[in-house]
Image 1 (cartoon, rainbow, N blue to C red):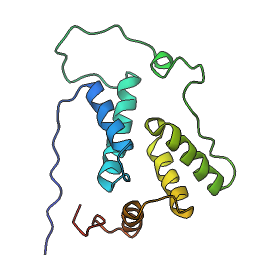
Image 2: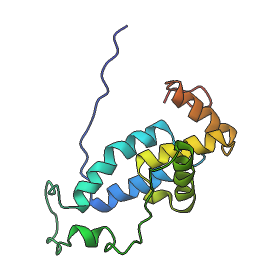
Image 3: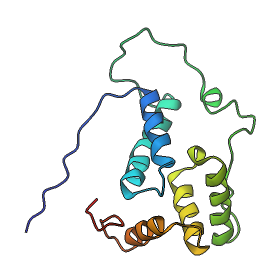
Image 4: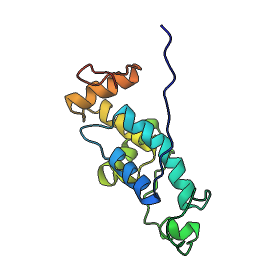
Length: 150
């Protein structure tokens, strides 16, 4: 049986809409699904390009706003954004990512979200649904906890 490649579409979204989708995907409960992880991995780099003026809009419906520089767009560089240090053991890094996820999931990168899930898994911090979803994703299974295809 030959499987068809997934069809892809190009929506027209504002920067605020992209940010909103990322917030929803990063804070999905009871756990972050594979679909949300896919959204995060696709939209996070795109959002970073938008924030850092690395990409221009396809079109503008209103008068353009005054541009801010990259440092201002990221919070002024005053240390407000949490930073995850990747040094030390993997377990320490996973715990740091979990603590960041617990306090501010929106600030987490895809790598940090995955590390937080690892920590949750290893320390029995997942619900039954989260556990089933995580284990299915680790096995490459494309089904949710009820056995439905994702």
